[in-house]
Amino acid sequence: MSAKPAGSDAEQGRDPEADYYQGVEEFFVSRRGDPLFLSNADWLLVKGWRTQGIPLRVVLRGIADALDAHAHSWSRERKVTSLAYCRNEVEAARERWERALSLGAEVGADPGGFLEELARALAEAPGLGPRAGALARELSREIRERARGPLAVRELEGWLLSREAKLLEVLREELAEEGVARAEAEVEAALAPYRERLPALVLDQVRRESMARKLLEAHGLPRLSLFVL
Image 1 (cartoon, rainbow, N blue to C red):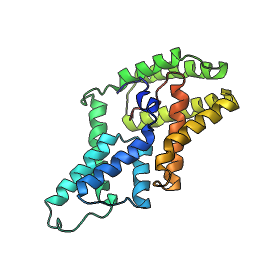
Image 2: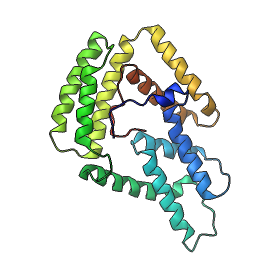
Image 3: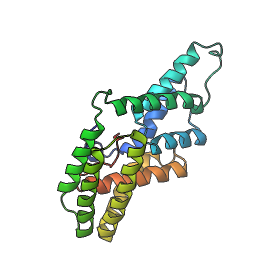
Image 4: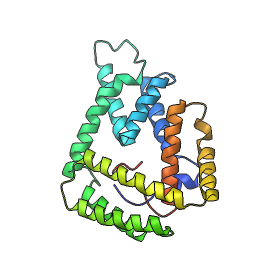
């Protein structure tokens, strides 16, 4: 867990948000053992996991657990035909991850330390306009106060994302129209390989998440989230 922005994928023309969906699809298909295109319902399930902030590696752990259990069950001769079969195990993996995160038992997991890094990044963010700069400093103070209290993972994640939404709104308002158009064009170019494969609802979600990441990274900021792809 780190507050450092990840720029390498963007620099190589890859989209980290779309990579989440592709990672789930490729892992599920490879573990299932023969080609299977995900259905629209499957893609929407992945969208739900992504929106909830479940890390990709946690989702893959849940899928692996579900398919391992199936391989040793009485129904192992029946093919798993939908990603929905893995839903319960993904939720169980998510709960284990959250418990480990809350206890600081996961390697690299330190919500308090993450919040301190995030507060520092907001306070020192370069190139912000007057309104965004004032808001970033305010958020920095709020986050430092939050870091001194209890850190329930789900509550903390929702709180961070609500603050991020406020910051993104101001960043867009202060960015010249030309700058917004340029950023949107870069996002569309990165999403071109996925446009025919993802349902419109999922593609819109990926587009919004990608734009958020781009606006924040322009000022050296990570997503305001415990979940980092």
